[in-house]
Structure formats: C-alpha cells, structure tokens
Image (cartoon, rainbow, N blue to C red; front, side, top):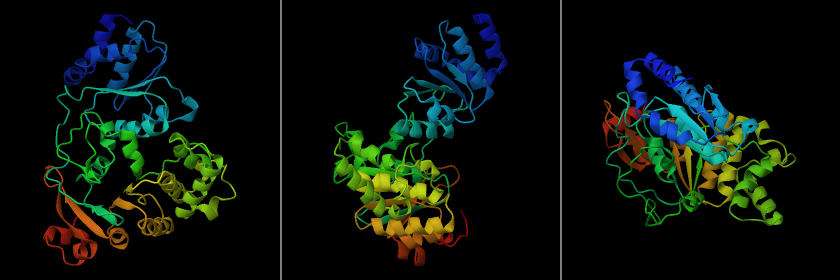
Length: 368
C-alpha cells in the first residue's frame, strides 16, 4: 500500500477522527519500527483497526499480527498466543476501559511488553478531568475499612493508589502524599515491586493463572526467591487453609485452577495474595460477581483475615459493608465534579447516625 492510498484511507475516517489520530501517526510508526514479531491491535472503533492495518502496510518488513479482537485481553492473555514479543494497542479513544484492564492483566500475568499508543493528549475528543480531590483519610491497622458510594466517584481509583496500580495507566497524575507505615510510597526511593508485595490486591473478577491450583500460590513464592519445596508446600497448604479452601481442593492441587467455581477461584486469588504475607489486602468488589452462598464465604473469610491483615474493600453492597467493616468512607461525585469523601467514621455510626444527610440517603437506598 503506497502513501497516497494511506492518505485516502485516513481521509475516509472523517475530519474530526482524522485530526485525533494524525498527531500520533509518526510516533506510532517509530514505535513499531523493527518490531517485526510484534502484535498490533486496533482497539475500540473500526478507525483504530484501519490505522493499525495501514501502519503495518507502510512498514515494509512488518510480518507481525494485526487484529481487532473484541477486547485486547484476547491476545494479551490468551495462553495459546503466549509470547515475549511486544504488543502495541492503538486506539483513537482518550479513555478506554479495555486498555486499562488489558494493561493490568498483562503486567500481572504475561511476559509480553505492552505499549499503548493513543491520541489522548491530542484528541479533541479526549477528556482531561480529575477523578478525586481533597482526600484526607487515615486507615487503621488490622481492621476492615469499606469504601462506599455510587459508581464513578473514585473509590477504586483511590484503592489503586495504595499499591500504585495507577502507575500502569498512562497520563495519571497523583498529587499529595500517601503514607504506609509513615513512609511516602510515591517517593522515588520506593521499590514498587516490594510495595506490591506488602500491599496485595484482589480484583472484582477472579483472575487465577492458567496453571494448577498449587502453582497459582507457589508462583509468587518462587518469584520472591523461595526455592525449598517443603517450604513452598507448607505455605501453599497454610494459605489454602486461611482462605477456607483447603478441604475443597486438597485432593486436586495439581488440577487446573480454571476448573474451580467462581467463588472458589476468588478464594484462590485471596490465598495467592496472602501467601507472600502482605501487610495490607485491597479488595475491589471481591464478591460482586458471586452468588449469595459464595459471597457469604468471602465475607466470613474477610472477618477471619482481619486478625492478621489490614483490609480495605470497595463495595456497592450496603449490607455487606455493614456486616464486614469496622469503618466506612462514603464517596460522592456530583454533577461531573471530582469525587470526594463526604464523611468517614465507624461503620455503626455511619449507618445509624451519619453526620451528613447525603450519607443517610445513600446507606438507606434513597439514591445510588
């Protein structure tokens, strides 16, 4: 495909769309130069796919994979496509949740380098806004603190600040100070890998590795240098006991974790998180996709774990917040403004005698 054909195709996308993409064409071309074994994925719209295809055609020696899957995860996390070759996600969308999730999953589970190439800074469609503002909160040790509030008010964003998962999202800027144990975790001296060992995370969707139940837990131990098989065996068993899963899986430890039920997979993810002995466990709606029985088991597990861990949980389930948490923080974002904390305090007081009428309205189901 020659340059004139490329220009014709780009013109076909429309003026606004063309302006949004054009500023990124040269950086994208430079980024893929020499990456003959890479995968280029158009994300979001047909235009993104067209641009990805055209770039490949322009790159004379490019022999890699071009695709437009339903989500970027299909290539990044598909074990049949496992590779250490890089992936380039090309999108004309300033905000794309598929890209955010793909980055988080890929950097936890895949050896493939992932690069995001978007028009976020240049696009007339891109949105530049604050997610949170004026946050001041102290979280006590070895209790459960619940973040509650309507969708889109910044609860999960703040949660990801505590183990710097937001570092994986392009163009995120964090101001102020976040301290754990008196130390600023955003200091240049902080080892982020070590921080994430201290601050584990359990996501809304269970994400077991495509490995055996045993290897799901052993993986983190080996990654941190534990080589003794007897030690690994002991930690695997203890972690499964602590996650109330041992009795259900002890006879099939070497079976695939993907064969477990949704609730079992989530408890396995909790076992995997606690195996490396973090100080803090972050839980982002850990039971939202589970049935009532599985949810009850997760809640019982949270109550048991708080004896040894500091737990911060995001939940939209007010009954769950009342059952498992010691303290609550109520978040709100109104009329397109950044999210903020309306009030926080002991859970009993927040539910029975809140100081702000908006808190009372929310916990009693009058909105949200």
